[in-house]
Image (tube, rainbow, N blue to C red):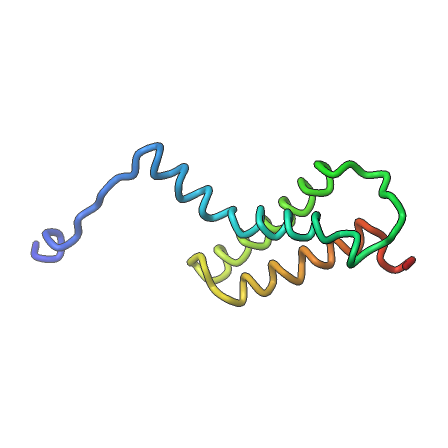
Length: 103
């Protein structure tokens, strides 16, 4: 009975859920934007046939997948190893998208 009295559940409203989801995907969005803006420095010098928005969407999707995998694997968000995996996965994806092996 005492344990039940100590546990207090506060349900989240729609704004709280949106805030948590936006904060969860913010690192992936920032990483995709930084890689997109610095793409000419790390990749091919030729113009890419892929549009900017499509490249951003692909990098963002890869980033969200890595963050979700880290959440499932460790059971919580914000582990530094997850962020390191985010950097490695997004950088590898950027290298593939700009055909870095041809540079």
